[in-house]
Length: 535
Image (tube, rainbow, N blue to C red; front, side):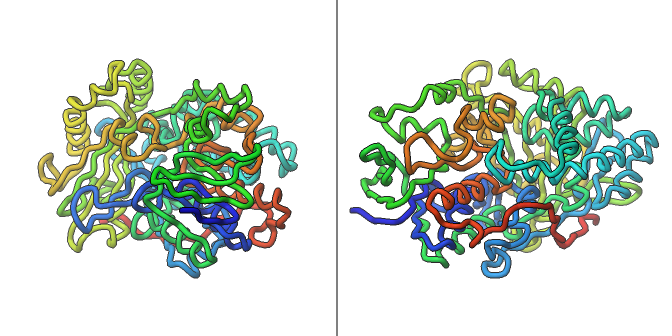
């Protein structure tokens, strides 16, 4: 069986679908092939606990996507035409530290500084200074994200210099220098560590950027689950004549006369591509997809040394009600909360490097989007997801997780229960535990149980992502393009790899990208409805 399109896209994660949507809106015939039963990838949602529960497999917040016109300015009509909606939790983040009163990042910098000022005037001032210093740098960060690395002129030479100096540092030491109290330090580092180890150079901007965006647009929770984004994107592709076909695993990229001309699936179907193939498969899978007859340039040897970054262990709890925290004389049902100390976070990364599990001082993140999105659970019920960072090769062998995951999950649950009221271990209706090995099995893109598509380190960022010299989304085989979290600017739900790949592909095909997307010149933070999480 052979079917023909102008462009065949491998994968239906949010980046692949964003690219497909732009290409379809530009008038190209597009076929998207997804091996899972539903589109979504890292933005998948499913009934992981009980029927009627919308449990996110990986991402829950789409904060960075709000900076991308594809989502934040509804450039693709996802809101106006396909029902995508976001709500913003208030407060955005609550950090629980060592038995003291929780401290929150509120929906304004001033309110957050007031919360910090209850225990440290110096840190309150330092917080406002940090955000004031970083806000002028954000447009340059967005400009760099919105095009292939090294292209285009900076917003301002001095701004670019300041951003480079900040980015060259590591976030951990910067926060330790600028803030005196560990409660503030872990507030800025605990949740931001979702991108990886912030003690590595190249992460100096991350704490400031997370804090600024959380105070301005909060967590940006998609109503209905993280999969609301890929569902809207798939609807957009179909509305413009494209196809999104699930249950089709790409087995081979067809190369004829030196050019990518289609895809063969594991089921034997052949989808020919008259103009291009766009792959969102994990870049380490590219050599196998191309087969032994295609010789990639020497730079692609770096894929054998690809560093995947932090792996994740997570626990989904189906609950009768969302637990509470005591907070400023009242109670709070937080949508996002972190538990742990600064020393525990530092020790955790050291333990992960050794393949060991961390003690009870590790950072645990608790996500409860059903607090602000009642569509995620049956009426009267609630859900919480706990996750922490853990080694994939536990004590040197991933197989050790089979006997350890439930015990370690219990320790996460116990940590959570010590801090909240309204929940004791065992109260849950159902508990679903996913080790790094389970996550890797659930989605081949979650290599070694990580969500980010590859560690965010200098050797795998910018012009080095995915490999040095091949960061423009064009691959060495003519007609073949790459997108997804393995490409610039990296993992997380930003949509930039998808939008950028579409722009490059349209340029190469002689189609003006300006017909379907504007040139990114400035940052416009959207106004997302705020939903109070306090009880």
